[in-house]
Image 1 (cartoon, helix red, strand yellow):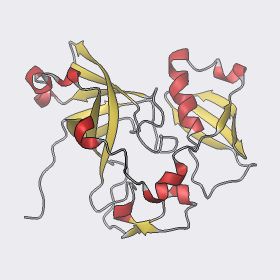
Image 2 (cartoon, rainbow, N blue to C red; image 1 turned 90 degrees about the vertical axis):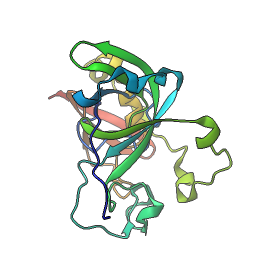
Image 3 (cartoon, helix red, strand yellow; image 1 turned 120 degrees about the horizontal axis):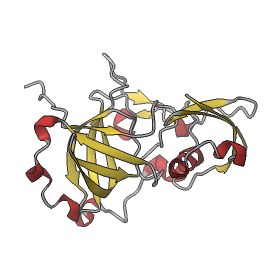
Amino acid sequence: MDGITLRRIAVIHTEFKEKFGIPRQSGRAPSALGRIVFEPEYRVPEALREIEGFSHLWLIFDFSEAHRDRWSPTVRPPRLGGNRRVGVFASRSPFRPNPIGLSCVKLERLEQTLSEGTVLIVSGCDLLDGTPIYDIKPYLPSADSRPDAVGGYADGFTGYRLEVVFPEELLGQIPPRKRPALLEALADDPRPSYQNDPEREYSMRYADYDISFAVGGATLTVTRVRRV
């Protein structure tokens, strides 16, 4: 048996419209909301019975923008500067033999809709808008939390944040409800670590806006906001 057929059970909609700028891990932008809309076949109320009793969920998803015909046994994690290689199975890189991702999100609420059935509203998202979801499982603190766990090379970056300078005249162009997640995503530093040119202007797509910025030292300064 070479494998199984995975069925898309849902799609998640977020404000992240392209890969650049998505938080590096779930929970890094706690305000980043997502709407999980089930495929018609799976819009069965019984399938969600008692899910509201769980605070967090595991999402098993498709790295839909990272499909490749070949795979590499090593990858270059951006946080390590792009020059140090580690084993693909010692990373969370999307470029894997099977482009499957795992993300832990907070379940905010269930929304009942006429056109889409029951929709799950989640936060702390690190997924591209339109990402296919293959499965959803409850997070169990008694089984999934390991306070004594060691995070290898990733432990050195858990507290990494940039100071974000967002001029008021530019911030005012962003609807207030969309600002917290955007600020958190910018503070997480969207750039690959090997790109550290203070003269370079970067741009990320967030919701209906292109956000341009520059980074000098530990400070990110937004330079332009353009409605797409």
